[in-house]
Image (tube, rainbow, N blue to C red; front, side, top):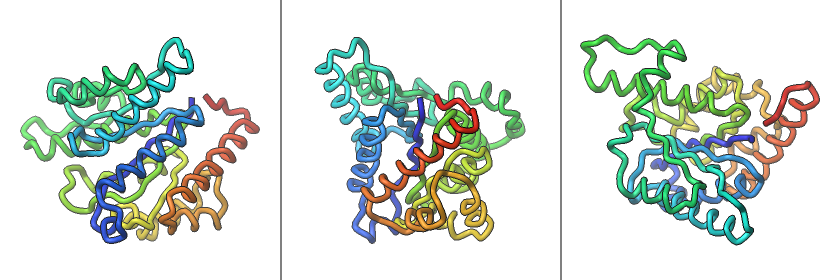
Length: 258
């Protein structure tokens, strides 16, 4: 099954365009709805906050589960994955209730419990034993983002917005995830029209060149269109076009598309 990782967070630039936290949440839900309706898996990497995007995702998961039940589905597959960069013991009751109430559609995956093992598997050296909490957190988030990128097998990443201040990792999360998608040769769909970390990444000469040359199923004109648009429905159509072309080429070259 093809996976779509939506890498997004609110930012001041988006808010100035009228996309406050609530509207950004609606953007995420609209994208999730579209790709779920096309039999894909949607992966999020958000902390759980009661007023955050995952609350909106949880409500939508319950709707998807109810629709599956009406369609007489024998079981609802976990097609919405929320990978949380926190230990399982710290997950809120709201997160656990959301998973339970989703009828199996939403799976909440605490990552911190497995960070050491995953870091070893990926060959990402942990910080020194005397490292402070900030350095440990940077390392954990780097491992987390590498692991999420590896889960796109096959799959793609969409990056938009993203805060540039107050981040805990090596760099803003949306920037790092865009960088990892290119480094691991995963199709990246970059939207800079909402500003923030996505635009900062796209403004780096080297990153812009690498993105322009990376294959994601879109031609140069479509890539530029996606970079600049703030029309979510238009962006979704462009991304869908790119995924279709990417899958067609992979199939033609004999690469299995799962």
